[in-house]
Length: 139
Ligand SMILES: [Zn+2]
Image (cartoon, rainbow, N blue to C red; front, side, top):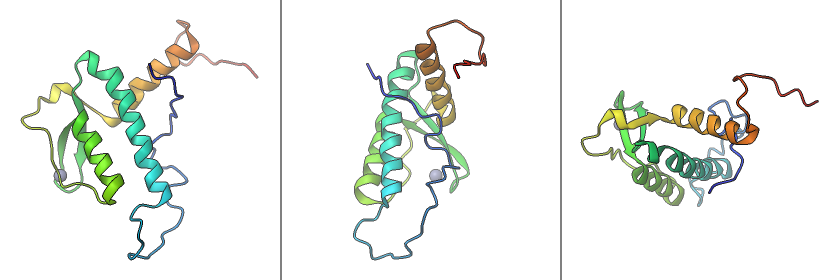
């Protein structure tokens, strides 16, 4: 059972830490910056949560809109994990290796997974059946 808090801003492209500094040095021994490395680690952690929540309801992985191909790629959970680990180790994203003959019905977007996880998290945290959006005026 996972019990770590889920940060709703995880993976947010508007993350203020994302564009801190461009070292402009392609000879650095460590290909990933600390920030990038942290992002990948957080993605891996998210992935564990998403798989734990979504796999039991039939979701096999995530669909990612590819900017290069301009078409969706379907990645199984294991593929996603492998790609992120590869990125962590080599500093380079893997070449496209989408799932074989995927059924789109069984894949959701990263945003959907995040929203789903947030919803489950809220339910577990509040333990009530209040309407969504009800303020928790505690201060
Ligand atoms: Zn592609």
